[in-house]
Length: 112
Picture 1 (cartoon, one colour):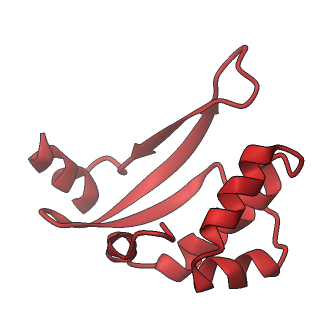
Picture 2: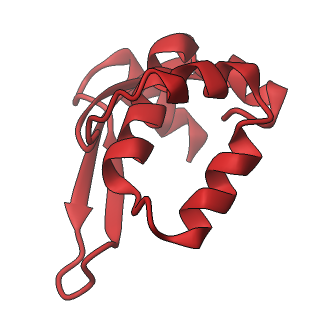
């Protein structure tokens, strides 16, 4: 999201998603894990990440609406839900669903 400029075009509301993603990383990553430190150091090559990280916002982000700009079917509005994997403390399955009968549901159906 921060290191590949092409990903900006995938999210119509990129500034909001970038802020949420950064706040979720701060809230959920172990600050004492060397892998976290390496990841943050790598992401700090990006000015936007550096600015957001410096705000010290920390909010888990498991559920909510996310918008995607798909190159074939256009904009998709999908509900995101993170499901905890039983017995695997730090693993989640993330599910994206369109509201039944919505333009996004129709667009997803055209993709399969």
